[in-house]
Amino acid sequence: MTMLVNLQTSTSTQLENGGKRPVSKLNGQHKDYFIHFYDEKPTATIDDDMNELIKSFEGLSIKKSRVAEFMKEECNLSLKSITRHPAQRNSPETIEARAIWVTEWLAKGTDYNNYVFVDKSGFNINMTRGKAWSKVGRPAIEVTPFTRAVSKIALGAISSVGVVNKSSWKLSYSAQGYY
Image (cartoon, rainbow, N blue to C red):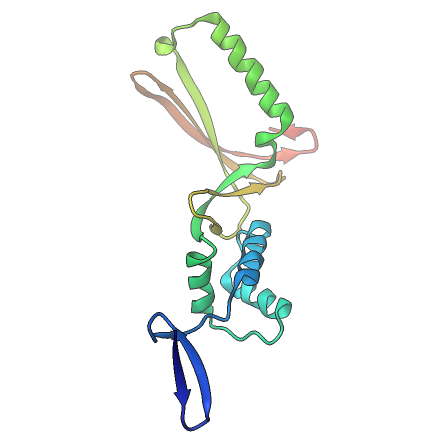
């Protein structure tokens, strides 16, 4: 560790990395804070984080670039594109229904080369930030609540020889359900 002395103000600053930069003001306590903060609010920005950080740790003065660097290097966090999952996707009822369906189809012993598989993709109307912080090696997943608004749906059918059909339409919601 190197010591830098300012002769005009008679102050000294400890330097790290062979005298290239001052010793970090952030420590293990801040690391725990960052990890907890982004576990709770993965889509928060660094500006949001810095506002909360300064409220939580009085007297702390730090640059945004140093916070971002600390999050990446010390907290092992990275910024990723969000994968959105509907809240019902992994509910116990849905998982049980999937398990029953797979068990029934496996018991039939069917050759799936002659089948056409149909799938749909919904476009999420939740206008939220498309990036989120998460631990390195883990996806950034946001669970989205059920929304009652106009959605767009794309439907496709594919077989072992290629795409059979594709279409799209708007889906509306009423008190009775979707139509």
